[in-house]
Length: 266
Image (cartoon, rainbow, N blue to C red; front, side):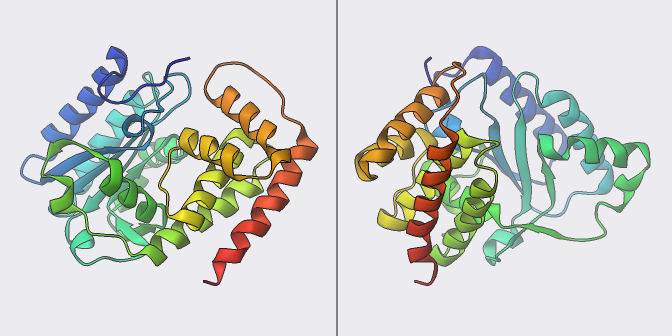
């Protein structure tokens, strides 16, 4: 099937993102610096059947509780309609003075849906501003925004986001690598292609999409893994349901784990 980017994405995808932009601009009047797109829609590998919409919103100051409540209530309706949305709201001062793990003011993804539904019912939302949370993944997201992100609203990317220290980006993706390997039998497509993406950065500082990383791995990895990567890409690029050889997946896991471990102490 065809992959999409922001420019040629389906009308339903653009409509969903435009509804998000409308929500944020209306709720953050006077407190909005910009809305930024990253992930598959900016890397020419958006699959409408499988991909998330990945966003970062930068604000001037912390949002008040009632604004956060309204945004989450709307995201519970907007996300999965039709695509899952993952978004982090970051205060500008937390970008000006870089911190790792990076603080965020509000986060939404489908993994948080049930948590938010319960907190809204039991009025735990009133405590959302009682503590500051951080996320190691933001170092990776911001690096990708700087390389390949798109400004949907507001100030230009290079005036808002700081350069992420390479060690912070490396630490961020190595934590993602650990997660990918732990669940590689449950989510082999994610585990294999994300592992290839991380290995490509560690070897040559490539910042690839999953699809690009798979193509790179076919050329770079030992021959016995080429067919596995090809099959993984075929599943990723289509809606076919093919079962990968579990023993070969486990062999790949041990191989890539050993290769990546060579870079951990550098």
